[in-house]
Length: 312
Image (cartoon, rainbow, N blue to C red; front, top):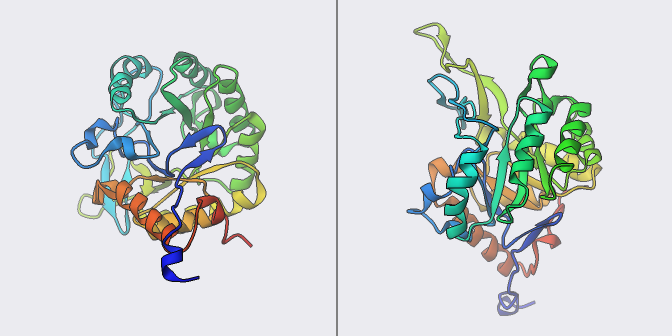
């Protein structure tokens, strides 16, 4: 095929995550984009596939004591502690602003008990602007002595089923990488009724101040994100795509178009950009443009043509 014939293909960047339809696969990861409006000076936020808002809990949370963030080799550690005003304030104050900007909204929620997750979803029910709910299941389950929801398959299935019973909004649990068998966790999410899975959340890590001889973070441990976790994220997405029939929202260290393409070829239907936003707040638009150019140059009409292409 001649070069001009290749370029005649008009790429369609639209994707689906189960029942969720997006104009393009690029989303802003929860906790890195605030409520979206904070980035309006840098890019048109309504051009993103979706904005995943910062983690929202049932009531107001103050978060962890500082220091909360530290740069590491090829990434960063954060221990924000889900600082947020609570679901009712989000629905009354932040959701209307996003609505005015015609933004596709995915609500990220977190809870300490299954009942809290269910209650938040019941409050979100009926708000048509919310395309989906991303469940942060890397939270401690206080009813189980602090065990993370996302590390136990039975608990994952229970919390997903509980929220599905409270809302018709599509549910996308965000899987924790701090497990032995990620496929087993994804299977549990599907068994509970998940419409898709988001992966991966941050890896647990820490840093030590050798002068003070103390942990750097006020919370001691934090979540590692950025390019350092990309190989782990790719491996886990590859495994889940190959073993579990469920759409994947993939993320973990995506810094450019090439990274995004790797995630798609590993099996991700859509992409979340997080830590890269702190390096380049215009990164989502740059990746959208880069995907379009790659598709046009390679006569790819739809991203479905290359999704999972590297899986053998």
